Length: 313
Image (cartoon, rainbow, N blue to C red):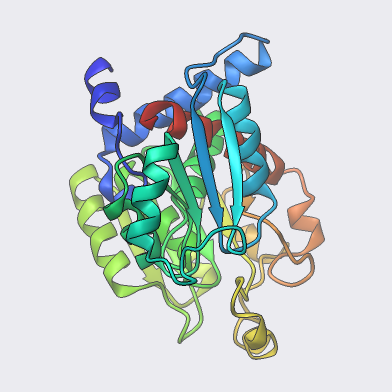
């Protein structure tokens, strides 16, 4: 444990692909312990006197609130910086911004569009940089997701995760997390909306080392068969709103509804990263049903991100 803690200090958190299964499990265990401390009213402030810069190029509910509150609970302070508050991308290079911010702060998060932006920020920074969402991955969400599964199921290895919907950043991180943790992962997306081939390849390579598996399918029934976790996301992610009508047609057979979940295990967990469009990608009966853990999942964004910040900063 001490060795893993030492090797995480000062690291960036850009994607789960950069972390070993042991490091991911360490962060999950730390998140659960931090959550226990908070619920018990125990003071835990390892980041007292430290500052986090939060750069947001995309709006957010859960990401902003969970990081800002989490940093406060860890004893530090968080500084919210919108794209209109700083010069990054408006005349000042990302590398220059990274070097300046490194002189002021102890850590940075970036919620952005292009993944290259967060990579560039990390390249120029001398402090930990956390990917709070990019078009390629959403690793903080995936860590919170697997914390939730672990809490409800008591284990991760060998469980089946079925993702039905758009092959987006959430799918990429969920798939890599499952592969690293020895889980079985199956996704189903309509033609033209499959996950990134590079992400699939690296996830399959990771799964081969842990005893997990990754399947990319077309039929949602085949993907959800025997699933322990059923996951979906909006059909048109932020930045793709103009494709809404087109996507509604493409995804009409990919809705998570009462008929489809009959193919999953009876004690399956329904998960969604939120915000959700009830009646679109998922019916109200499923998202508000007894198998849904979406609000436990949303809460765990706070605890998982606190674990990331505490470990890295």
